[in-house]
Length: 80
Image (tube, rainbow, N blue to C red; front, side):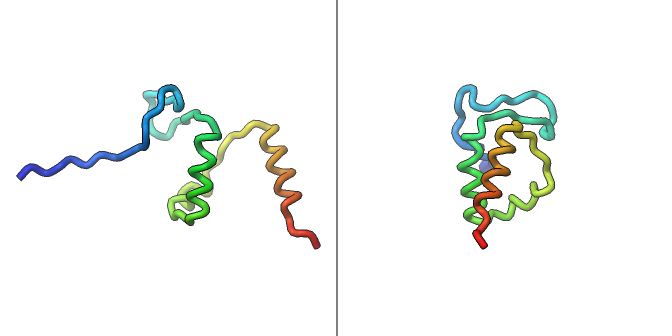
């Protein structure tokens, strides 16, 4: 009997949305934050365990985004 081959589904393919290189998997992939935010928000909301695998990973963000995140963090604290 013929065994079906399993494939990994990586979602719908969109032209030019992800920049990929021919280098090993540990290299960087550049894509718009708008593609990542909804997926990460859903993963956090649904408490996906794979998020803990990446807790110690470092990311690079623009300094203006960092400033906005710091301001948001400051103002979202509960008032005393």
